[in-house]
Amino acid sequence: SKPIVAIVGRPNVGKSTLFNRLTGGLVAIVEDTPGVTRDRLYRDAEWLGKSFTVVDTGGIDFASESNSILGQVRKQAQLAIEEADVILFVVDGRTGITSDDENVAEMLRRTNKPVILVVNKVEQFKGNETVYEFYQLGLGDPVPISAAHGMNIGDLLDEVVGHF
Ligand code: GDP
Ligand code: MG
Image 1 (cartoon, rainbow, N blue to C red):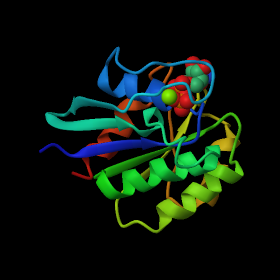
Image 2: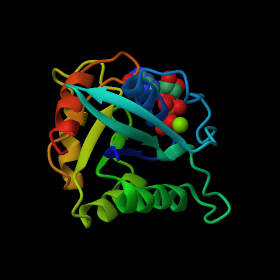
Image 3: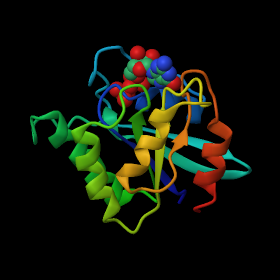
Image 4: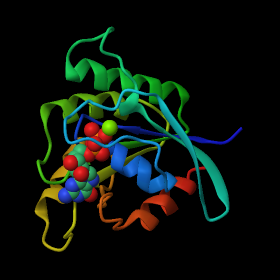
């Protein structure tokens, strides 16, 4: 079966927007209110002739198991660690690193699976020092993108399929 690419990150960083961008689709529901997407979302995508399945783990409702936002994002990360072939850890280039980001990064540093650190909402990379701050998460080179504006998505996809 196809490799699975899981999108992980705290609410409102742009996971659903990225999911839509990667899958070219209309499936994921994007809302301004954090945590509103409730369905488990899988959709197929293709890049450079390689097919894969993308999952938006933010659409999975873990609320009954863990009430805090951090608890839910940790559940997403755990699922991704178990079932994904490549993990996209999405953070918000506008807000910078949060303690939840640090907590989840600590989990992701322990997996042997490839983790790509995606800094979203970077519409202007030049001189954007917030992007460099994300090196502190210890997950390698941050990949700046704008999911909403489709910027640098090709470079991100090159890196994703490079891990298959
Ligand atoms: P999720 O909760 O992580 O799934 O985040 P969403 O995809 O629902 O996006 C949350 C908010 O961030 C929405 O208002 C989006 O329009 C906005 N957003 C998503 N991607 C970008 C981006 O690349 N740039 C900017 N400026 N806003 C974005
Ligand atoms: Mg979402």
